Length: 110
Image (tube, rainbow, N blue to C red):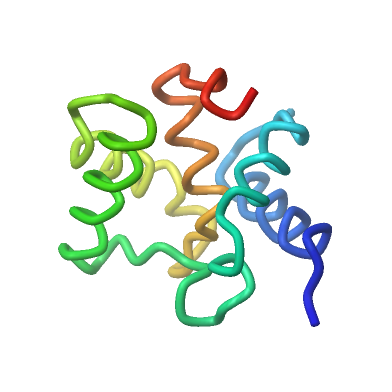
């Protein structure tokens, strides 16, 4: 069974491939932990940027509801673009980390 450390390691790898030089590991760990079982399931541990329903869902449920920011879909598209270097599978914790940093909402996970 995968552990939190495994999930954080996978997210760190995805961030490195996306060009993030010095990620805040404590913030990443908090985001990963908050995602719960979804980071361990093959079906939900990645964000699909090619699925319009997934993009809308992340924009509404995470960016707008969790972070309290109105431009959900636009910022999700910006992160999709930033994570192109990570390959077809965008690790959910890394994706959410980039959204949190994009909006300066680190305090949500303090």
